[in-house]
Length: 169
Image 1 (tube, rainbow, N blue to C red):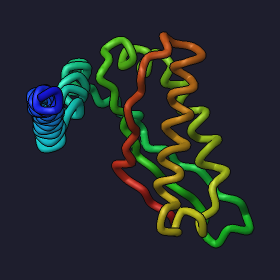
Image 2: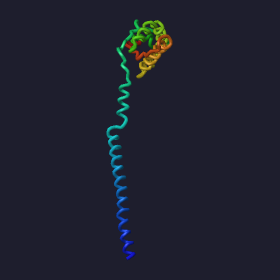
Image 3: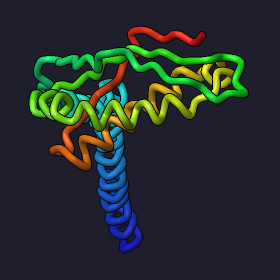
Image 4: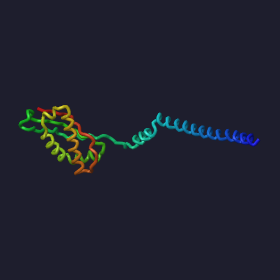
């Protein structure tokens, strides 16, 4: 009889212990399912990337109206005597979105023109005929104009320079 009571006690405890384990596994399984579905949703939606994209779009300031300053008359420079091309003639305009910079470009036009004449006079026709020769000269001209605005003006942004005419003869 003592054995019957002991077996009855063991049988009573077994389902309770097994039930706790089942409950723990069910809760863990449910947590894994919920976590997996949240992770999957974030991967599909893109997570934080869309929030960063929205911030980037909002952070871009309104640039205002474009102003083109024409550096008339055209630049005409003699190239080196050993160069097969005798001279280079370039008409140029400068782009800015800042009215103050446009005023400074007009104010400092003699200094800008001087520095550009020196830059253009150092060029070699063979380099300018290369695929990216004019692009390199355009970048150098932009840097030259920007340096004058930085040194003698407000330091505002010169956005680009454009060659509206480019003749080598």
